[in-house]
Image (cartoon, rainbow, N blue to C red; front, side, top):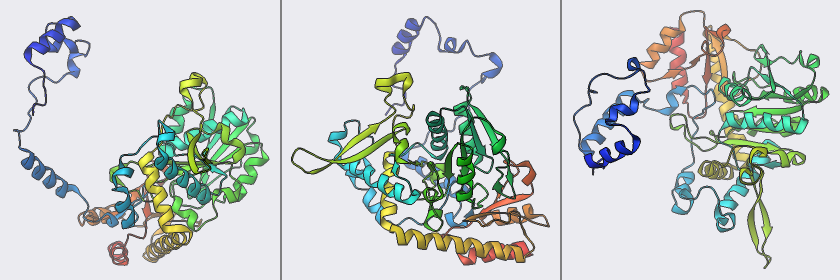
Length: 442
């Protein structure tokens, strides 16, 4: 099959319509130093089977043998996925269904979203959840815009212990607006709220727990402080599994809860896709972005599902729309709903406990080897450590064994240039953890 189906005659005809003589003329607006001069040295053509072999060889050369050998989380987590998830999602009626543009004709999709919303609201302790946002970063940005609509104020405060990528997304959203973004510093790994009382006209405060450093924030106390200055409390997260063990944000007084749901049944897949989980109190539902599926009965009294709220409504409200987000992560939402239903309340708690215990084991053993645990607070799944010696050489040695031990934090926080963020989930074996500890102790 030809990759370029246009004949020479087709090309000449299109150039004539464009008003140029040669293909190169189409790139006349690009400065000459920015163009490639010469023939691109492409490799010789391969057959389909040769190309498959070549791709497999390249993949084998760079991949980590086992995903459980990657002790990095930082917003993306490797967990075991029950086989039932793969079996169910491979069914054609699930894998092909996506956005219900004709809701009444998509009862299966609507029911799956409804069940996901129900489980999400229960997990986060909120009244209502939407059908998902694009990812954790967009969910946080949309949550803050929503909080500004509800509060009718112009200022928001965001903890610097929130994932740095999420904070960049928020800045991108707010850059063309007249809203003011205030960054709250962290002290000993927890958000420092001492300046809240001095900020006039504050509409919302956003805090992540467990935060980027794995530290568990005191959400209930934070909620009380935020509400005392007349602001809405936005609680963010990157690891929702933590709420299988910790008190959820709704129990701690959060008004809006948002974050990344990747760890609930979705593989890492080199960074995506994920889904933004989003929930709020019922009194704010009309200001919530995205869509909400509801349950009803038809004329015969039979159970049915409808697209109850589509608050963005670009097609009707246009520039007055609640949000520019026009879809939801359909398949990812389906998988996450299946995952939560498969584990159930007890399973989530047991899995969260295993994650906590393994991480604490590794943290304590590193301490015994002389490592410094940088922050004192309780952690879940992740923690920050620094080392008296040259850990980077140890890390490179482990990398030769295809073990990725920790994430250097210098690129995110200059004051933590000699510190590393470690993540331990249920997929990390005791043998792997002990081997890393032995390498550190050498």
